[in-house]
Each structure stands twice: as C-alpha cells, then as structure tokens.
Image (cartoon, rainbow, N blue to C red; front, side, top):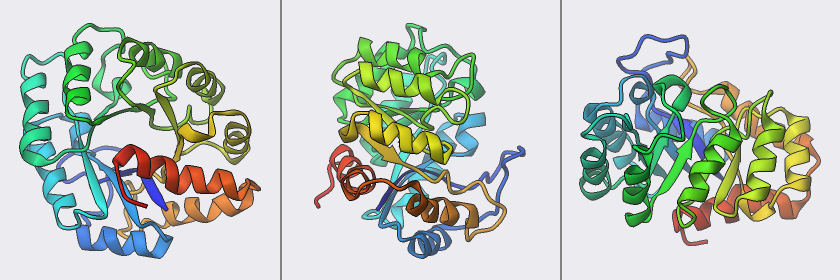
Length: 253
C-alpha cells in the first residue's frame, strides 16, 4: 500500500503536535510494521515556518529511501520568494509535490498569489496537496475552486474533510475532475460512505504518521489496521491503496 499523507518530525517547532526526533531508518521501520511500501512525506516544521531549510530537511530525509519516500515541499504563498523556492525544490531537490496548510499558514485559497505557484507545480508535473477539514480557510469547496482555476493540476484534499466537513469534501471531489480526496483522519463511517459514493479513481489513503512522540507511530499502524473494519470491496481497497496513488506519483505497478 502507498500512504499519501505522512510527516517528518518537528525538529525545530514547538507545537502541540511535536513528536519524536526519529530518522529515516526509524520511519522505514514503521512503514514495514504497517505494511506500507511507499509514502508521501510532508514537512512538519515547514507548516509553521515555511523556509528553504525546512524543504532541504525533507529532501534529506526522503533521500535515504528514494524508492519508498516521496517528499513534498512547502512555501508561504504571500512571500515574493515563493515561486523561486518552488522552482528550486522541483529542480534541485527532486520534490514531487507541494503541501500547503491554509489554516496554519493563514491565507485564503482564493488569493491570486496562488496562481503562479500552481503553474510552477503543474509545469514540473507535480501534485498540489492541501490541508482540508478546518474552516475558515481549509474547506473542500474553497480548495475545489482553486482546482477549477487550474484544471490540469492534480489537487489533493489532504484529510477528506476530517470529522466536520467530510460531506463537503466528498461533494467537492464529485464535482471537480482534477480533485482527489485522501482519507486521513476521516472517521470510519465517513470513509465507507466516501468509498461507496465518491469517484473511486480519485480516492487515496493517508495515516498522518510522523506526529507521534513514539518513533514507531503506533496510532498510524492502527489506522492501517482499521481499514479491515470498514467493510469495503477488494476493488475499492486496491484503488485507494495502490492504483490511484501509484498513478499520481508515476510509479510502476
């Protein structure tokens, strides 16, 4: 299976989500314990302080396992250096996508500064992943509006709406052809409903691993095991865990 939503440790940021200072080897061991063959890895520090250093650290982390870990960078869209930093990440660091967190980073998905950023990601063949599920800035329909402005860019809702806005995220992905939904922190009853009613070729899965104080990321292992209780079809499982993420990342199956 491919985990489409994990994080590096919070090496420098003091937050309520600060976890253990684990390394790439520890993270690979967690992946093995959960049956995860590959993972999208997002910055943690970069969501609070989107700096070139944060992007360098993600690149170094995933660089130890280039066939299993795929790093996404982050920027502050309002900074005049955002486009240049994105170009550096895709060109020099081998970044596979961009992760933004409108709620933490404090910007609206409707701001025009996002358009040149999306153009860089699209030109690089990358993926745009956004946090969703926490109003006022991170709702599914707000992110869908951005996706419609850039119809050739794959845009991912990083949390499938979480507990409170998953119905909105499902409606957004049903109505927007280049929008994907990652079930990550979504409650089981919502996950079943999404898989039964959403576009099966655009649903992904993520554990949000990397936030724990334990390098073993036990809660993320439990989230993988939880899938067995969702009572979904083999077809849905194959699409969500293997086919869809492999296609987005350009991986051979």
